[in-house]
Length: 188
Image (cartoon, rainbow, N blue to C red; front, side, top):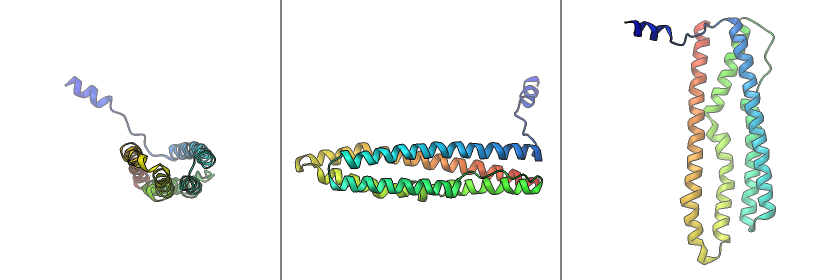
């Protein structure tokens, strides 16, 4: 019986939703969004640099065009990142205005994560497909079978795994945000 009592007492206590902790949570949330987006912008800049180098260094017109498509896709992704799920300035209001702001910010992030496939993944697909076709068609005829084998046994599974992971992580994040939205709705 003592073990059950200790287990019950050691459970993590939910912090009650008060205006003070909503303000603190909203501030922390916006800082985390800013930090995440800065990392995404830096990663985008690195990726753009790599694909620009591909345009310069790799042979084959289709590979160069595909690299250009990838750069365009990454620029679109970065713009959508800012537009859809960028950080917002925490208002000076308190009370229901602050709760409404935080709820809208949570819902905006949730909706952005739920649609990540169309604005984060889809824009780079044409570039990768064009580059893949370029690697195949630019290879000498006797090497095309080996290139095709490498593409479908290494690159495609890797891209499928990365895409699946990105979708899984974002879906999980959207569910967590929905729980936080539901908590705020219970306060109102």
